[in-house]
Length: 178
Image (cartoon, rainbow, N blue to C red):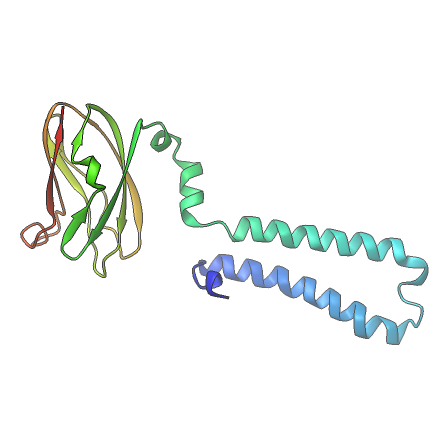
């Protein structure tokens, strides 16, 4: 039940409609049809089996389509993000930016910063340094994620939240490249 809460309204409706069709068929086949036709499914057993298998396959398909997490969908839509050579997870929260400990000194190259807002208010990640002029994610709602792909040259980069006041409250860190 808990994973259902994470789905969008449209996905919940899609799963609910398919589930109701499958449950309706099962209840009809179990309770109503035998009262109307005592030998149900009788000579129409082949039709019953085909309908049951098709409904089962449609339900599995609905789970695959409507149960996909947003991050899975965005990974399919953004092949350029997957082309980055180095991926660095970044966690934003009140009032800090958390990078993996070994990612404070980097080699020059292309980087995919996978940014997650673990906080309770909107945050963003802005990068400023040699060859990168204030490149930023959008303002991320709590629990939202976004990729920020940049090419880093030798030098020092400032990673910070550009929402007014956040940098001054501690959402600022440095990364050295080279």
